[in-house]
Image 1 (cartoon, one colour):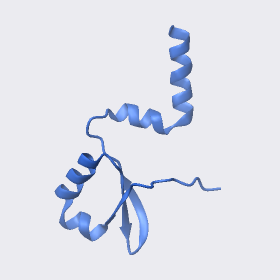
Image 2 (tube, rainbow, N blue to C red):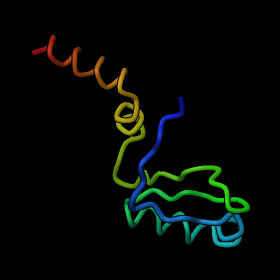
Image 3 (cartoon, one colour):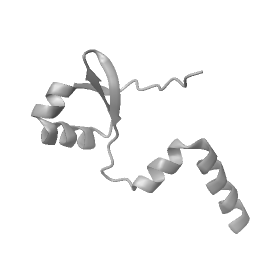
Image 4 (tube, helix red, strand yellow):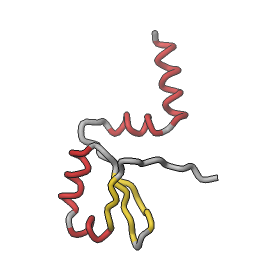
Length: 79
């Protein structure tokens, strides 16, 4: 079974747009704070997640429920 990803505010960026305007697209994604989905021939192939103002470690931990639970458990024991 495939997990469904909900991205109600995600912008759709074509491969052509990303190729021709990479810096502008990346700047817009970081300023908006919303992810963008990259499409190639009408199919979604990747997602770009903004990192401005975030540490990559916190984003990785937040996206993995097992790691998130492990961190919460460790924090409870530290108190």
